[in-house]
Image 1 (cartoon, rainbow, N blue to C red):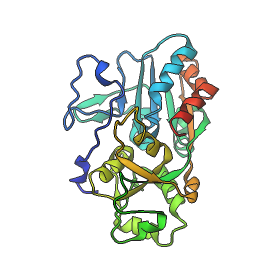
Image 2: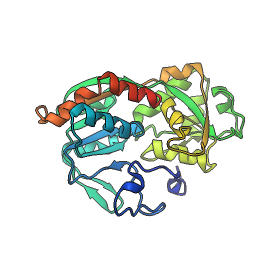
Image 3: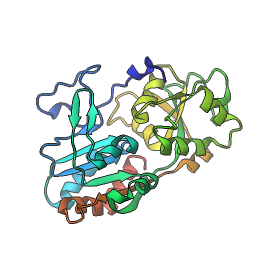
Image 4: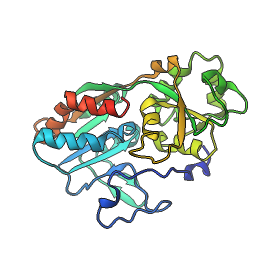
Length: 284
């Protein structure tokens, strides 16, 4: 993806919104969508696979009831390779802001958990998504009807980066592998995200740089949810093979945090019927 495309964005809603004191959010300047909460006051710090970001505010409200009290939580919603360094004592940086974190919880796919097994304890699967759909601009101006239309010369595809976000890229490709020569077109002509596809890829479609993107169903559900967007920016197409792109979600304690009461509570809470209900309400 070109440097020009890296500047593209959407008018994303903030999790904290206007109720946060001394709000200096300014689109184009002071933006930090994937860092949530107060790291200095946090009683629980979570590093999580970014594509769950829309679920967490509702999940936290239910967690406070489950725990019996409100706690300060700081959570990071990034592709797992982007937060891997924090597990090994490296800081995370967004612009001029540098954060040195001590996470207690990791939420990521099984493939990532295996790669950091020496740093985590008891990873377990707690959720699965619904697979992959095709997201297009509102009104579907290119009249894309199915995955085979992605082969058309006039259709530009946006997709997560196969080097920096391997797991999501592989999920999307699995859902599209039934289309002959489509992977070849993706490899040669697609617009790839650079670091965070759940922010970059929809921005490419919104701006008109791309026409379509394979994305998880819960993204498409989120984009059309009036709780977050008064007017939908996108439409989406469901296709049967999209179920082949389903992914699992796991949670693990960071080693040394096995006896942390709050971390253990979050770990157990994610397997409760209430947590599963909330994920279902967000399209999982």
